Length: 289
Image (cartoon, rainbow, N blue to C red):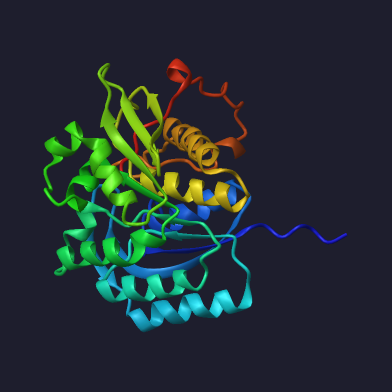
């Protein structure tokens, strides 16, 4: 009997020599969720666990060739877009995504620290808004990044009127938005899922000590994998947060900088701890990119 083929996900993103974020985080998270990733390199990063030093975008024609070749050979169940690298790459990815409108598209392209290293950062953000947002099933974005995407660019104003800012994104055509990293009244980290009708659900988890690299990539990749497995959006978002929270609890200090999530914590020989219990029936962790 032939084994069932794992759901395939084409993932656009950057390579990271630490193996903590971008495509490497995607590949590990996909595998942990029973999926097979098809990585398309959009940029090459240099750096260590403390910081990313440089970003080198890949030529748009090469991005297009990588993706088109595998898409003509295999049937994908989902598309994930991370760091895009350049305005030209946004155009190419948007054209490719338009050819596969029936597949869920998880968009996690705004990374303030890295985007600021590109000379056309503002044009890049505009291109994402105009070409990729209207096609997205879900935008995963932090409150800080949402401020950059907002017309005002004022983080304090975004915090006060989060719903209005998110709904302006949804009005552009994006189906759902998951805002991460806001602070609850009790001081925990709060994430909020929005849909066409407004706020769908809030999730709150206690803060996890330390700083982490690649948690945001882990979260968006896990959501994409769960959608590829046929899960509904709200369920996929919740389960992906639970998984990401566990990877952070088991994170490793690989170097002298930030901790790296352990996406295969469950495969270790040590006994698996009890499943995280939600705070007030709704819970989720904090996710640094």
